[in-house]
Length: 303
Image 1: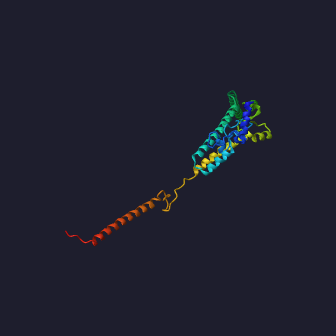
Image 2 (image 1 turned 120 degrees about the vertical axis):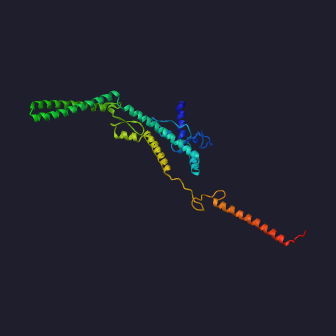
Image 3 (image 1 turned 135 degrees about the horizontal axis):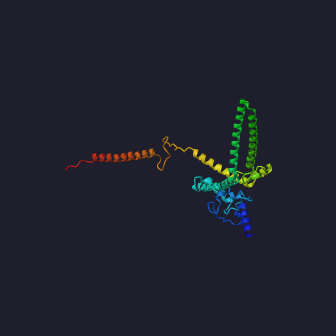
């Protein structure tokens, strides 16, 4: 009874949020390990198969709408943060794991519906016998034509009787082969087949309403949603590969000038450096001219 109560508490916490149940830490951040990253990035698989035979139970991590809103806000404000790319990659890997497990069950179900080795051997023998009978009928028909040309009526009539017997035997073998094909394998008379989306067994004898109940069921729709997610992830990766690399923007100096750095573009830096040189040259030149003028004014000393 205690385990059932714990499962119910987790289910309510998952639906309403742990804060509503009074179990969540108010200081919990969306990057915390206790927060479900599948829930932050999209859909948690635990919520897709509730009350089905593939029920995964309540998710052990927190599903809080407040944290999801904060996560989406932070992602929109800083989309280049590698944390969001890591979360998305982990989310895609988890979804792929769920779908891959379903595909393994589908392959195992197909193997269970296949024929046994004995049934395969019997089918092969029947097909070979039918082919041999067809060759015998073809040979007997050619003999009848030859006997007819030679006027051998009795031989022709006996050959025709033999051909009729071969045709009757061929019909019996074909009926046996058809019956073996219809009833062989684990499917038997039920004509079972496997759903390629969720792996459930279906019967070709099911009514339209029963099939509609399956295709509209929670388990089938859940795996259908997961497969659509994988297709969307694939399309987004292909789109990202086809985006051409961004070209370097041209600065004020023309194409290829590049954005100005700390000291502006290279050409601006060189021009400012040359200006300083010219300024220094002018400064030192003016001091040299002043000294020459002072010497010309001062009287010459005689020794």
